[in-house]
Length: 49
Image 1: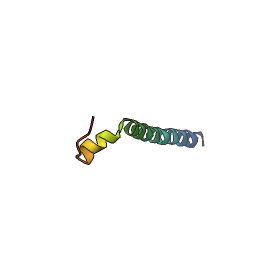
Image 2: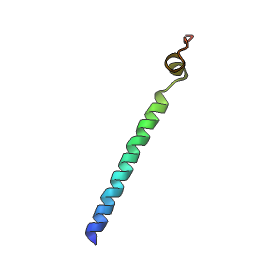
Image 3: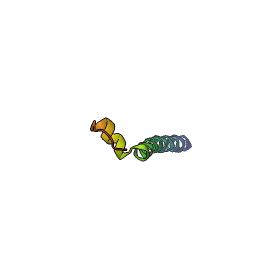
Image 4: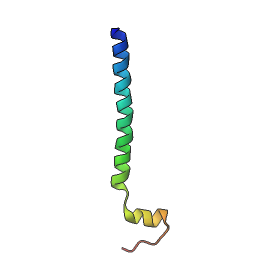
């Protein structure tokens, strides 16, 4: 039974680790995305400086 608990604990830690990596990447994307970047590269507009 202890082996089952150890396996479950490792699986849960791995799952939360993967979720943490995804959330960290998304947070980095959101904080470094700007309106001017979208206008220049996504909508292909000229940005006024």
